[in-house]
Image 1 (tube, one colour):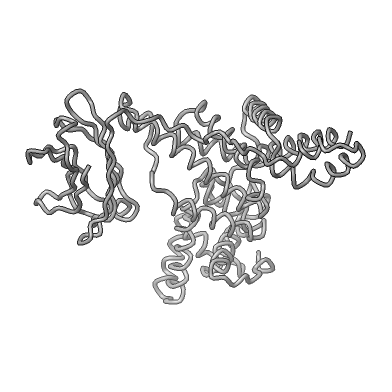
Image 2 (cartoon, chains in turn purple, brown):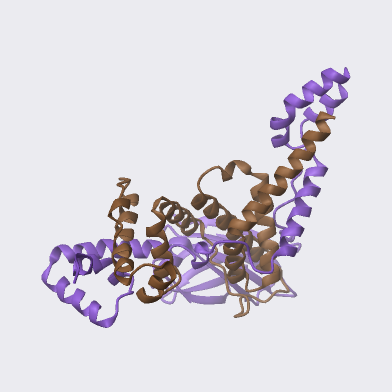
Length: 234
Length: 183
């Protein structure tokens, strides 16, 4: 065994699960006798967790296979956008040249064209379809529970569709989304179990309830014991 | 005419920028977008939009390869998320189905982390990075990684150890050069 094969140099490969059974056993025996090695393994595991933050695709290199049309479409779009407007970036690079041109031509036209404030009319990046008429949106942060909730209530024919984002309910809570009617009646629009991610980053829910769109006054989150976490007036 | 010449040069620069991003990051972007959307055609649209946004914001591309890729992946993910949200709010659409896996909606944090990880990987020596890519990201065994990298298996084992240690040094803010230790 060379120095490189001593157990303390295998801890990384061990953490990454790349050792064969025999080597892994040798490392485990070593760990049992060495608190320092156990501490090191704990640190290396943190790094492994950290690598897990990356989508696996992030480490691929090169152009995509069969992506020629994609490249051509992208180049075309860029050419069209470039042609359609005088861009700020171009101004920075081309201003000096434009001034010289103007001086040579003795005309303000070139300057006028090149330095006119560029209409940065970038097309909206993503098209958000307009919600149907009568859609109501509400948001709240409950002062006592700290629950944050945003809801959208969209009318259907005599009933409503509900989309809610709920964050801050403690993980492990069994929750219901409840739509409240003007006359006080309550309809459940869905239920879920709050995960750790849901507690921190929020859970997005789609549901529906048979309450006339005109009668909806609030959407609430409560657990199965009836404890209310948040109520949004709409 | 100077203005015309300059415009032509700008157009050539645009094309070179798009091509180099595509050549270097296209595969990662398309694979990532394909997994998020579950649809190659939709994924191509996402990549196209991502590259165009990169071209519109060249100042976001000035750092190292790792952070450029992190930026591109972040943008791709945001596009997918926005489109997914748009789709979900359309009444006639059914909610989530197995064919269209749900996208984690509040993703800002995890995306920031992946940018940080990519930047950290960028600072490793290529020996260290390669061994992590083979073993961690491609899931290869020590023997397979050794063959792919053309080094003895013992070297793969010790390098994976020093690579994780070097990563840790990077995160703790002490940029200790462990390159010399690579065995």
